[in-house]
Length: 436
Image (cartoon, rainbow, N blue to C red):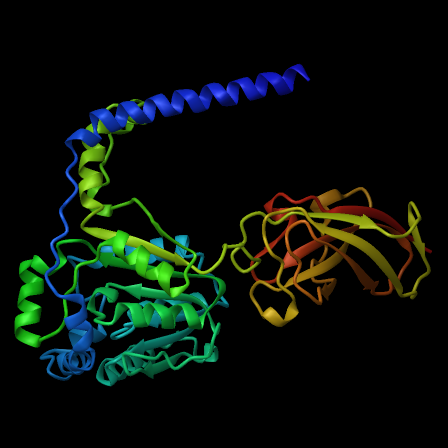
């Protein structure tokens, strides 16, 4: 009781101190950080009216390109932007919780270098663009790489800039890399994205900020090619996304260009706050220039393709210590298994990777973990998905032993192609067995 009271007092103290610290930092740092004013370059309704015209201009941009090889070689052909492109992709994969086996739509794919990376990663990709010429170059990107995963059936789909030609809920994730700001009819496309995204899915995008259209490069692109260079105001985008049916919009406050290098001997001082004000002013200003945006359709629950915490509680539904079986005898054992982690277990029809199986393997008695023989000894797929805190009853038919002896049977779960539960901190069940 005393320990519980002490813990609550400490928690209240920590919340109070954190609140005071936040108010101080806001007064000191926030007072000098200017939020750029929003001054729209385009009339949104006029731009939306010109959707078809702008989509034709986007196609013509790729038709008229002087050096298509430059686009085929992207991102490697842009050494100045290469680090940022890879950083962007890493952030979208990490925070978009993209995993092998996911069905991923890349909207505004262009030559689809992002889709190609995700194909090599093990995703079922759909590269989609209004430009058929761009997608022809995208297919060439895939064809040139001998390691392309054609078994994942990558798709290249042209769309009319209005309706996404996919079934409702058919995509696990949607990625957009510096392309949403080219879309004139954003409300319509957001509704389409929400429609084709599965419940619990995420749209991961990186986009320029509030003054993008005013840059010299944007002005030149609009003047020369007639393409749309829009500004992205995340507060307005969040409203549009909510109206389209998304449940939340989040921003990841991180910027590669504003991340400082800290002398190794000064790390502890930096963590304690030295230089914090200067660093945050630079970081805060940069967050209005480039955004990592995540649109959520329902709550995200990690699953066994991209797990957070894999934990199982395994209880035998039989007596016997040790188990006794005869040589050549096959025995079926029952277990009660509870998901005590925060990750949804996917069943066998999810395919590899990520399908969760119940498994057993023997080790010689007295050898413990170091005596593991073959983890592939016996697996049994789980028939249905198992949510966190759910309990299921599973059976496992053990292969017959061919010779007498004493063994230790290890019972565990495995997310196929991802991880054994025990290797991530879960507790496997170990039972002695005597074969006679």
